Image 1 (cartoon, rainbow over the protein chains, first blue to last red):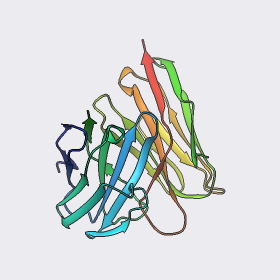
Image 2 (cartoon, rainbow over the protein chains, first blue to last red):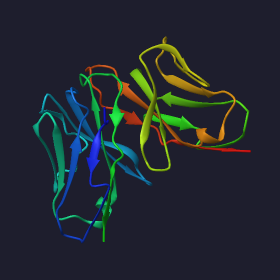
Image 3 (cartoon, chains in turn purple, blue):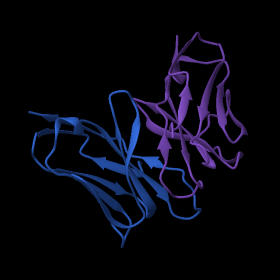
Length: 114
Length: 112
């Protein structure tokens, strides 16, 4: 079991460019979560999917951020027109059922917007 | 205000000593999970509790089963490899959701 896999580990973009972050959940897990970690805000929930359907995106910034889960083996987080304040570590997690149970996190993608 | 208040924010321990971290919740929570974040940034799950206590080696965690408004993580006989940042995270009651609200973390340094 490889755990939750996130790629790339690091991404540097220029202001205004697009960034796409990838997540492969643990095989057999039906829920995928996206979180963002910064020094100032700490760990913040962004969005989550259960059985590929979006369940709760209450943490997603209303503009420029979108997430998809086209199949059960991967999810993407896309940020359009990146801004310096988007710089953060983006963490993906998966769980077996998507309920109140153990979450397993990937190693994260460190996004730096210049 | 913050719904998950974690303390202390930083902790320095001598090897071999014991200590405890605590998280207070401003509202009743369904469950709590404790993580350690290592130097590479990986969040390692230590415990998931819906009630009661769990123990794993030198670590023990408890979740207040009555009020469901606080949780503790006890570290016994601290070792150098215990150093890292510890987070608690709680799931709200109501909808059965895995969405977690995190505390701001405790930076633990264990020194010889």
